[in-house]
Length: 82
Image 1 (cartoon, rainbow, N blue to C red):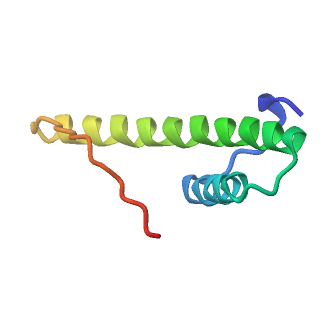
Image 2 (image 1 turned 45 degrees about the horizontal axis):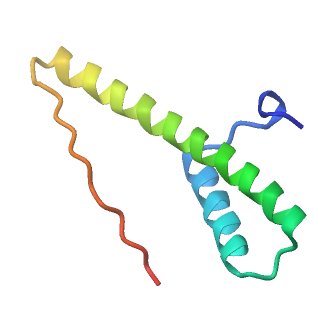
């Protein structure tokens, strides 16, 4: 199944699935062929999450501009909860 045939998930569902894929890959018990498949799935999910975040950022920017306020976004570091 290619990217165009994959169902669109909500941001939260895509992120949760991405976290599961990463955990599976980091477990070290996945055969190489499955690891490659999981990498491809993780990459697809990452792109989907990034796209959703960009859409949200643009929407917020439009709303702030409509209010006459500049939109200011700052990068932040996401820590792991191990």
